[in-house]
Length: 369
Image (tube, helix red, strand yellow):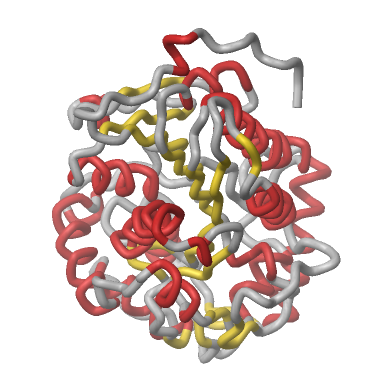
């Protein structure tokens, strides 16, 4: 956890004036999900402070207080949290490759610093962005709810460290904060978030399809849940409200999705169609994909390659199995209801891609492939 930070000044601990709107801290505010949360908060009239390693001028144009720091820097995190009413901890290290130590530093140490910052600055609400992968055990997950246990062994560095972080956040519920009162926490597990401005799932699928490198793992009939970006962001705002209004929501994790599982081949084909591409028809068996992942992981480790393998054992398992979840707890305790359907989301995605995809005359930007 590092050396204790210096005590905060009275100015940093000063309460919000009654005539001021709430102030929210969003870690990872410049990312795909974080930025949409920021936009929805500013749309409410809230003041927003973003904390991330990069600089995001587009957030400043929204009136956001943009702070730059690594989440491993506890004093900087504490400074960013000072004066805030609620924290949305969205930032994380994602991916399928890399050292465990790097994932632990970002996802575990970073989360513990956010919790500590809330306690030391008097923030009383913390919404944590987790992942359904924290309970993935390599097998089909069909209609499971939040009673599903954490597996004895995580399937990837990402899922392992996010599970540790999620448990830390939940354990921090009802812990005392500076100035009196307690911290209320909860975790959200949005699954496969996609939509306009996606810089991960959508551009990766389109790039691999155009290169002739996209394959279905298995027959593509495995059902998967996905979450349109606006629904995922709205769930975070609802969660922050529920931490005040509904004690039953506190200290819990909630699955978030569109509540509309589709066969993997259908969903992948729909995203490709939004990008003007034909559906993928070539397939590879789950066993072959797993062995390819094993070989590529070994080769990358032996050669010291920093880029992500095109297949890993974890990815092969994820692509070949069913992943759909009950969102009844989120409906009941958070008031969550997916407002944007998959069909409407695909229409919005198609319009965005037609304007911004470089292969169709626009400029999506770069994704990690």
